[in-house]
Length: 294
Image (cartoon, rainbow, N blue to C red; front, side, top):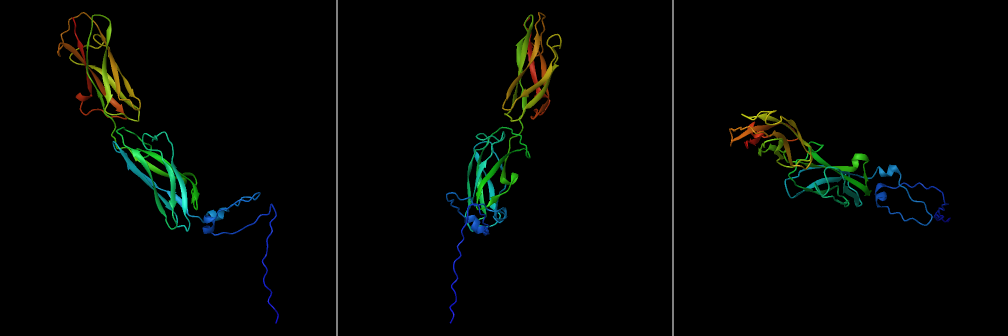
C-alpha cells in the first residue's frame, strides 16, 4: 500500500524591500498591534480596510447659560456600528475669541471609550452663567467647536465632521440706556461744563451707541445761556458709564428761573444701537439746571 505523502510546511523567506500584501478583516485590523523589528518597514493598513471600520461622530448641544453658577453642556458621541474591540477617541474644546475659555466655559479635554458592543457615549463641558448681553454668531448664541483626534479602532470624518458644536444660548436682554440730571452755577464770565451722567443697565459684549441732543425748557436760550449740542456716546464692550457735556455761558444778568430759581434745559436720548431706550418720552430726558448766581 502506497503511503500518502505528508504535506510539508511551506516556509516563506522575505528579502528586504519585498512587498507583501495581506488581506485582514476589520476586526483583526482594529485589534492589531504591530511590533517593529530592527530594520523592518512599518506595516500600513490600506485605505480600503479603514473604510470597514466604524465611524465616530459628535453631535450638537445647546444650553442656556443662566445668570450665575454653572450648567453642564452634554454632547452626544456615537459609533456608526458596534465593534468587537474597544474603541477610543481623544476630544478637546477649541479656543475661539468668543466664547472665551475661563470666562464663558471651562476648557476641557479627555478620552471617549466605547467598550465592545457600545455605540453611544457623551462628553460634558461646564458653562458659566452671567448677566452680560452676548450677541453670538449662530442664532444669537456663542458656538463652541469640540474636536476629535487620534481614534483607535474606528475613524473620524474629515474637516467639520471631526467636530461637535456646543451652542451657549445667551438669556440676557440687551441693556437699557439712561441719562441723569445735574446742576451747575453759571458764573459771571467765561464758560462752565454741564456734565450729565449716562449709563447702561448692564454690560454688553457688543459696542453700544446712543445719540443725544440738547433742547430748551421754559428758559434758558441756546446761544445765549448755553451752547446747543448733539452727538453720539459709544460704550465699548464691558463699559457701563459715560457722560455728555454741555457748555454753559456765564453772565451778570439776573435770571430767576422757574425751577428752584434755576433755568432748566434738557438732553434727550434719540436712538440707540445694541441697547434699548427707556419707555416713555420723559424717561429719555436728562435735565441740566443752570443756577443763576446774580
